[in-house]
Length: 153
Image 1 (cartoon, rainbow, N blue to C red):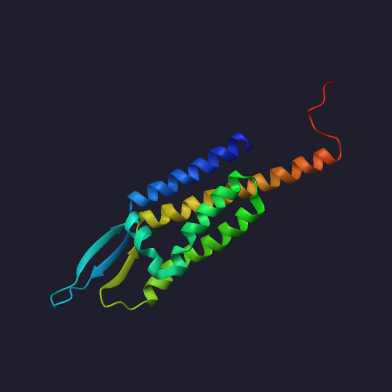
Image 2: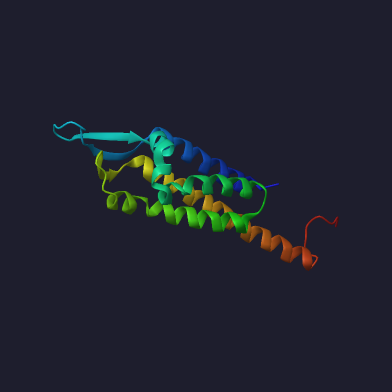
C-alpha cells in the first residue's frame, strides 16, 4: 500500500492530467481547402488526446503516463520512473515535431496552457514515483538491519 503522500501525489497527477484535457492546448492557423485566408483555431486537450496518435512521438506520453500510474500504484516505482522519463521526453519534444510537420490543413502556432498542465502532471507523477522509490529503499535498508518500528518495546 502506498503511503499518504504518495497517494496525494498520484491523485494530483491524475487530476492535472484530467484538467489538461479540458483546457486549450494547441493554437493553429487553419487553412481552408478551397482558398480563402487562414483562420486561427484553438484545440482543447481532449482533441489533442484523441487525434495525437497521428503525431506518435509526442502522443506517446499518454499511454506511458497511464502505464506508469498503474505501476506506481502497484509499487513498481523504478519501472514507473523509466516510463515517465521516456514519456516526458517525448512530450517535451511534441512541439518540435508539430513545428517540423508541414501540413496542408494547418500551421502550428503555439502550445497553450493545457499542454503545460499535461507536462506538469507527468512531472508530479515522476516526483511521486521517485519519492516512493527512495522511501522503499529506506524501508528495505531498515528492515535488513532490524531497525523497523513494528516490534513492541
